[in-house]
Image 1 (tube, rainbow, N blue to C red):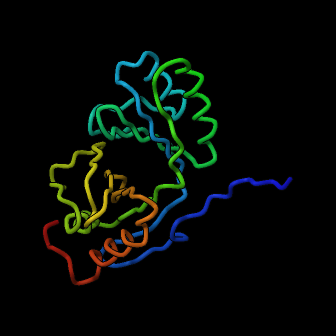
Image 2 (tube, helix red, strand yellow):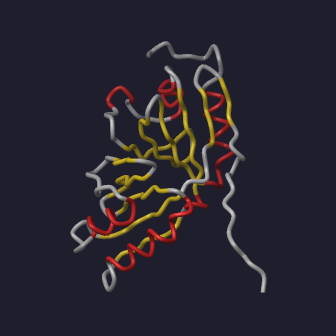
Length: 189
């Protein structure tokens, strides 16, 4: 029997583009989709045990030391952690919520993660997402679309982190790069 150890790979091998903002694909990143009723007994403690942060309020994301939890819908959260720690986090969730109705699934390999950084990083997303970025508060997570595909993003340091489906990673990299082309700045920031 052979060792079938899974070796993570990045959807676009760390592709990047330097325009008036820098666009980089940053995978692989550990991600768990968690579905449960908000009043499920032990849910906040289970999330804390799995990723080390509190369960976020609606439309918020809590991040600390490469781990986080983001609110995706009234009964859904995205848990973020180092890729190698996903199996352990899932085991902690299973133990903490045993016998209750919930779903926790490793979606790490089904997602692509991008960083858009620089002084005008917001202008890249303004071109692609129907979101008022001026009103986007620190710690707010937006679930929306980037051009024609589903995406979620939040402010992160000097830019934004954007998550999309892995199957459209090339398209997302293309539209982000096109939106960041030098000379195409909006002049709004």
